[in-house]
Length: 125
Image 1 (cartoon, rainbow, N blue to C red):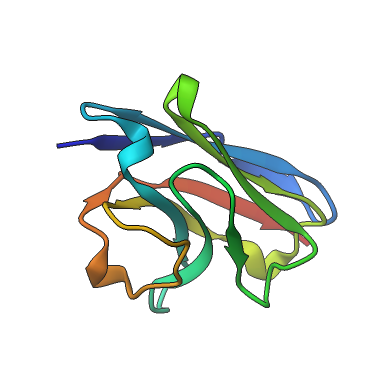
Image 2 (cartoon, rainbow, N blue to C red):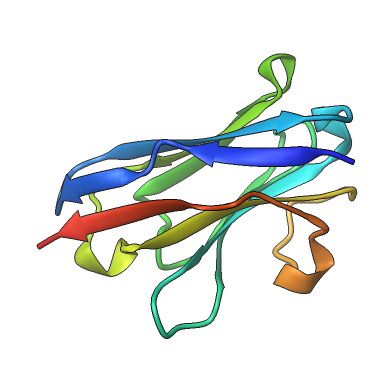
């Protein structure tokens, strides 16, 4: 099994930037498509972005397109979510999710089998 671990969350002012990391241990990272989800208090888990196994294709939710970028470095077994122009409504716990599949998604959360513990992102207005 592969185990993702997120890092990079924190408190940032609106308009600022953060870069989240997803470090994967265990099996070969490149065997997995990767996605970022987020969940705000009282809301359902929301798909944010996805990337194929070797990074050739990405998908971004319309709510973050133009502001967020997803990428990965398989040599480092690490994926990233670069978040720019952050808004108050981006405040949430962000999760890295992996799935042994071709494609970038988006797929429902229950089709991802490997999840990290989440990292909190708080954007102050």
